[in-house]
Image (tube, rainbow, N blue to C red; front, side, top):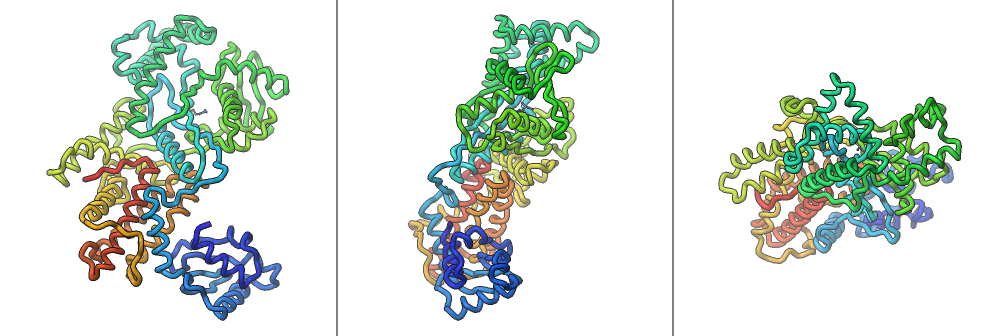
Length: 569
Ligand code: ARG
């Protein structure tokens, strides 16, 4: 509980006779400033107090008034069953700014005595199929969630469930043996493997022997055939190597690259268990789990040719992870089209008697596309992430060149701006929404964009650089009382609760949205008030501290979202 909650709880507990433990969880932070800093809904006590919430609120309000408020509370209002507490401004400012100044980079972070043990699966691209925009979303959302969870005291284990097993490898081996070229593959594995995969599908139309060939190769692979295994290993290795460069660019890291292939040794025992527990049954030559009664359709866990399946590998993976980590929660960041798959997965786990199935959660997201059609059609229907990133950087370079021709190292800045634009656009609406954006929109410096925030941060930092004294953590008495100053302090004070909500809803978007509001609030302050040459020395001291706090919280927020922060722009 933060100090602001505490003050309110103490006061109300004293006059109402309710225990602090019952009051604390009810406290709300009103969305609008005119409703105060903290609000307590009185609805829950109406019955036991035999009074309407409205009457109760005004009764307690009167008692608070006649007892006299402590210096931390400016005033209290009773409005429609709510008690709205307005905190003393100096008290809030001293606390928030002092806290940020003394813990830079971690305002709003908490430490739990028993950290939540979270397994977070995200990214999970497929070998032979390109790393698409959808994979950018899982990577970006997953990485942001991981960092937000850590800020909220979780211990996070990051897993990349690579699509590195399955019938596509039969096709790929078959294709490579016919048309492959080792040199090309070495240089651009992701594109080359994809090309082979596409060609195989094209030629299959006129050559019916291909399907047999592919089936044969996958079955050889599952049986451990040397040649098949060697090719598979090679495909996998070169792909991971290329992926890792991409992950470095995006600044994400995994604890484990446990792809689907990792679980092949555990599939048989899963299938056996399903059979023994009478969860699965034979249907034609395949083995299925019938979830029709649960409204989740039938799902195949073993095909007639005995080859294993995506679902079976997911079952094995979940069981293995529970074994390894005994997690408190396991989160799968995967696109919305796979919703049914995860519902089925969790249901089967539950039927197997795994109570921990309810700790598994599918964090879904919508589709992302570009207003610019040229981009999405250049390579058929697939958009390669690397092309998108290149495009973003090229466009950013032009803008940077225009805005600040004398800037040093424009290339590095353009990289950060281009990347920031895309990543921020991806996180700036609820994850489940489909996002469609245009390059112009996401790259502008004065919309609700990544570059806008990056630019605002650069500006704030440049003010701080020009201040040649140490930045003191104390707020001088009587300062920061102006409307725009107070508004910024209040906005900063919300950051911890935004992190809490983002964690709870699994929504990095809430942080993105907050940062845009914060930057706008800063802008209003910045355009109205002088900072380094403020009316009094106290004002300057206080305002510099305020700018410091703003820069720090913005920096932290952007870092949590994975948005790079250039020093200059
Ligand atoms: N490789 C899959 C794809 O790209 C996503 C894997 C999701 N994770 C899982 N455990 N099934 O569509």
